[in-house]
Structures are given as structure tokens and as C-alpha cells.
Length: 317
Image 1 (cartoon, helix red, strand yellow):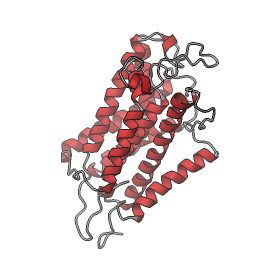
Image 2 (cartoon, rainbow, N blue to C red):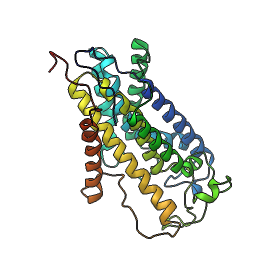
Image 3 (cartoon, rainbow, N blue to C red):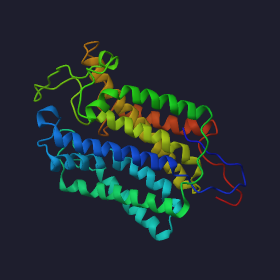
Image 4 (cartoon, rainbow, N blue to C red):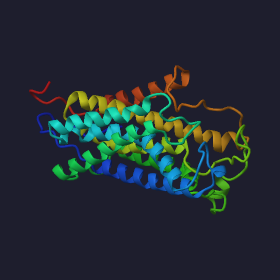
């Protein structure tokens, strides 16, 4: 749902990075919460980690910097690239390549969330993206921010509100407590009720610590924010790649948030035994075919109503 089309013949603005800065703040807060929660809680109350304490909490935060942070960092690098001089643009490409290491099988595994040496590579890519965002900020300031308004921003706001509401059990788990004792929400959501699984006899409906549904929410919120700047990217190829990537990030994030919410709040409640298949790892499946189709529909559908990108300028291929 990107915006920002310009009138023909107008000069392309430098992409504003207010949304990118907001995304960095969000991920920084969550990374600190992950570190603290995994440092102070016993392993039995967490999920697929083998230790606790300050070092183990730092290790889990490192994995969080791989997934999902590195995925979002790639989009941020695409956004700030046009603000950077040639040599730093090459550094941005290096940062994106390091972030992309997270796609390699085994770098992050749902079944083993302890940190591994290879996790340092995507984390370095994230650090490069963060530093280059700072460089872009120093060179051009926060940039022009498009005023809130229009149908797409209303859609963004409604979808973001629904995502945040649905993620309340994950937010409380991230902070290390169950939602059970919170008035209203404690009765609305499943949280601390025992729901054992093989290998996890004391597992609750929503285990304490980080959730892949929370990752999906973060990815979707980031995509909603960053999509506001697609039209401000002047380079046609980069704008197209950025738009497709943000649309895919939105579809992927929504899919994982919905899948985890359905499992924990619907299936574990006993409402139905029908499960949505996991979509964390790409695979040849109908679920992933639907996910990619949804991403393309978002991307080309937004373009079709004239809100995706900037019209070609005279003399610009």
C-alpha cells in the first residue's frame, strides 16, 4: 500500500526516513525486552532455549537481530541507499548481503533458538543498516514526511491497530508475564493455561518469551510504515524492488501473525482442530503459493489504483 506519487516533471525528493527511524526504535525496544526476559526467566518457562542469564539473554537477542530484524534491515537499506554517496552505497549492498545470510537454512531454527557463531553475520548487516541510517540522517535530516491522510493511510492505521490488539498476549509474554491477570484482556485471550506438547510438558497456551507471531506482527507493522515511502525512491529499478519486497514482507508478516494467533487463541481453546500450516520457512506448498500471490496482489493492486510509485519523468528512462 505505498504512496507518494509525484506530478510529471517534478523533482524527486530525497526519501524521508521518519518511518525507518520509527522502525529502528521499535526493534530496539523489543531487542532489549528479549534480552531482559531471557536473562531473568528460568529455561522451563521459555521455548527452545537451553540456558538463561545475561549471556543467554544476549544470545537470544542476537537471534532476534537475525530474525526478523535482518529482514526489515534489507528494506531500510533500500530506502536510505539514494541518500548515500557511491562508496557508502556499496557498503549498503554489503550490509544487505550480510542480512540475507538469515535466509540460509539452519542460520535460525525454530527448534533451537540458542545463538550460533553464524548469527553474527546477519547481526553485522543489521549494524551496517543502522549506521547507514544514521549517516543518511546526518546528511539529509529526517526528510519530508508525507502528511497522514487518504484511504491507504486509513487502511494502514486500522490494520496496525488490529495487529497490535491481536499481539497483546505476545507483548505480555515478551515482557515476561501472562495476560491472565490483566482485567478484560485476561478473559478475552488465552495465555497462561497449560497446553502441553511433546517435549514441552509444562507448555502454556502462550509461552513466555518471544513468539514467531510477534515476529510476524513486527514485519507487518514495518511494512505498513515503510510502504509510505516507496514512491519517493527515484531510481526505477530500486523502487520496484523495494515495493515488491515490502509487499512480500507485509504478506509474510500477516501470514505468520495470523497462523500463530489461530493456533494459540482458536485451536488451543478447543474451538476447532483445523490448523493453519506454518509459513515461517519458505517451501513448495499451497500456503506459500497463496502468500506469494497475496504479495503480488498487494503490489500490483496498489499500482493499479495509481498509488504505488512515481510516474516516469521526462528524460528519465
